[in-house]
Amino acid sequence: MDMKRETKDFLWKLSRVSHNYVETLDKTISNLEMELAAARVAQESIRSCAPLPEDITMTESSGKKKYLMVVGINIALSNRKRRDLVRAT
Image 1 (spheres, one colour):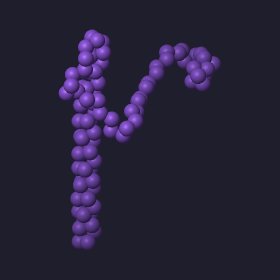
Image 2 (cartoon, rainbow, N blue to C red):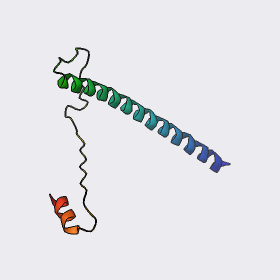
Image 3 (cartoon, rainbow, N blue to C red):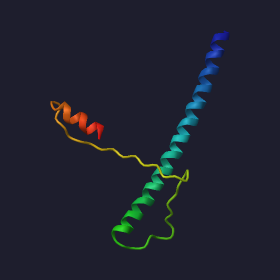
Image 4 (cartoon, rainbow, N blue to C red):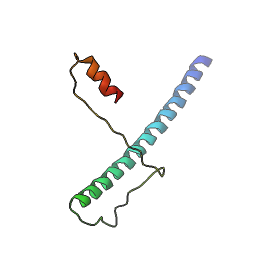
């Protein structure tokens, strides 16, 4: 009987942690969607040389902007020297 109760307690705690984690992810996604929308408005404003609307503010969550960049290079699998050279660059 004691083992069943421990299992139930564990599963309840695990569900609470999972629920909190999902809520945190939802908030993060929501914030990123708002930042993306603001960035798109700013980009369109720059492209059209129009002033940025006053109600759009670019938020910085930690003071420093973090960027992610992915570079894809098409190289044939048979050319190992070229792949190694590109990776080293």
